[in-house]
Length: 455
Image (cartoon, rainbow, N blue to C red; front, side, top):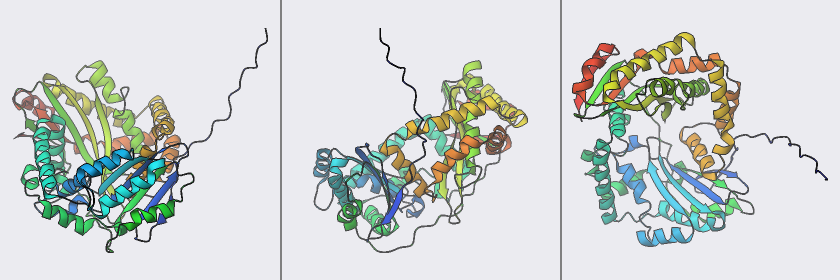
């Protein structure tokens, strides 16, 4: 029998986060583009400099209504016709508003890229904003608010942001507005917000996918280049400040069989040199089923189905710095509320006293760095990350540098990052649950003043 020689493995190809190229259209639109051969579904994101802080007083949510209205037709196409054109192009489009900006997202096959960009350009250039559609979107948002208030996780987030930030700071209020503010939004308000903020000169386009054979500058000029507007300086944001002295807020839900926990504070964001170490340490604390929080609260004690620790950037400041929400989130059965909090504080104190282990650090690095080539297989994931970098005023090579740092960080650095991120005495705890059952035991823990509010 003849045996074929056993194949030998080749040298693995080094991976790095894709580096974009830049150009600027004649109308002032900044473009980041990244050619990804073989990725036939092209991802496009437009970042519009319309931050939530720019919403007029009493009209929180108008940015969200505008974002949703961008799919509701143009000066030449009704909403139904616009949706039909997107479908015929094999494209999807959506937009959403967050604290830094409005982001419009398009995905379209490379073979239909011109048509997709034309529809996107028309939506940005000349949205119809029909009054009846604005009324429908407002009604939908009001319905959403009712559901959000019934959702323990959303209710916890609302309470935490209201506790951390001053009432006059837009960060303290729901991103998409409250019932009191949304019900006052009409077409005139949406159109005024559009006129004041939607312009190419202060917007950025990110496009990622297989661009082989495409004369991209010419294509963009003939589509999004038709979008015009006046010149304006980019918006600036006030510094993020927060009151994160340790305390507990219980949002009373009589009869609740579970308690939603959200424990957080404000700390360094991606602009800070400690960000990579913070990522690594936070992953060891609560990033996976084998993290410290899950090992104790889920596996050993059986309090919960899972607890996670995370960092969420908020907004960049005018000086190029920024802040992030650092938080621990999960839910436990009502009777386990105080024991779960007690164990969480013990985990944090033990972490500060003894540090992470080399094994924890190694496992975290293997996942965070090793999964990156899979995480960024699609054009959409690459475009979203590049858009995040633009949104937060970060350099184009930021993500690549983070992965380089993660691979080189020591256990001591990761420990220092997570310990600094979660000091027990600076954590604001929000509990959504039955106050009559949990309040007294929580007070006995001594983790801060306990206040009970109604939902």
